[in-house]
Length: 228
Image 1 (tube, rainbow, N blue to C red):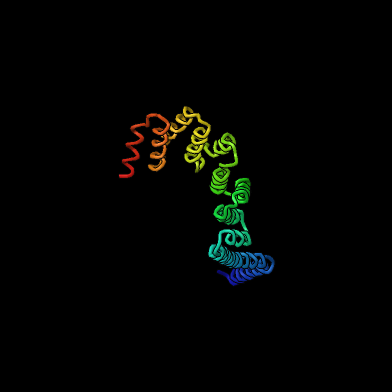
Image 2 (tube, helix red, strand yellow):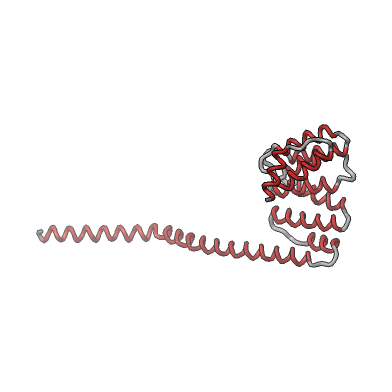
C-alpha cells in the first residue's frame, strides 16, 4: 500500500469516527432517555408492587380489626368505615358487612347492602351472584315467592357459579305456593345436571320423596358413591 493510500485510509477512519461521535452527540440523549425509562420503569414496577402489597396488608388488617368488635352491629359499623380503593375490595367488605347486619337482625339494611353489591357493574360476577342470592334469601319473609323466583331465575343461567343452588331455590318457591308438580319438575331437572354435589343430590332426593315423587335411583347411587 502506498503512503498516499495509507494516508487516505487514515483520513477516512477519522471521518468515520467523527461522524460516529457526531451521531452520538446528536442522538445520544435518546439512548440515555431509554435507559432512564427502562431503569425507572423497573423501579416504578417494584414500587407499585410494594405499594399494592402494603395496601392489601392494610386492608386485611382493617377487616380483621373490624371483626374483633364485640357485637354484630359494632362489627358492621367498623367494616363500613374501612376505605377501599377498588370495586373488588368494596364488594368483599360489603358482603361481610351485610352478614354482620343480618346477624344483628337488621335484615332490611343487610338486603340493601347486598343489592348494592349485586347491582354494581364493576364487581366480579361471583360477588354479584352471591350478593343477589343472599339478598333474596334474607327477603324470604317479605318478598312474594314469584318475585324471589324471578331473581333466582336470573342466577340459574348456564355458566353462573350459583346455577344449581338457584335452581333448588326456584323449586322451593313452587313448594311455598303449593305447586308440587312444578316443584318436582324443577327438582328432577337438578338431578340431570352435571356437577351436582352429593349434598345437593341428597337434599333434592329427600324433597322429591317428601313431595310424593320418585327420586332418580341413579342420582341416589351417585350421591352414595360420592360419599363413600
